[in-house]
Image (cartoon, rainbow, N blue to C red; front, side, top):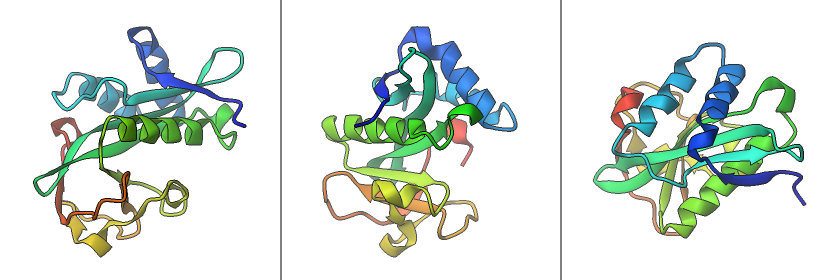
Length: 167
């Protein structure tokens, strides 16, 4: 049983989400990206997820936003963030699992992630190139991964992220 409570971000959490991202990354780039994504038409309420510790402190964060695989609607997972003091505690995994569960409950079918090849497979992600999925930028083949939330066959094509990603 997880010690983490997970829930969707509320307006009152915006500052805490920014602080989590600032603490987790070396620059403000990810925190600024989350702020920009909130204003993007691809923002989906309920898919910005926090994990909260027993004292009520936000400790982990995961965001899913709209993208396309070719012409097929999908989601992009990221940024995901955990401040250093909460890393390796399950806070990030709890937020990611809750985000994926929320997306599944909304009827979403596919999720893309560009991230650590040894971390995201634990959630069911696999190499995207196997399905003919690509990006407009050069990335490591192992880093671009995809997940089918409902077992549907994964479509191929170029991934188109929300405009704030810049790719």
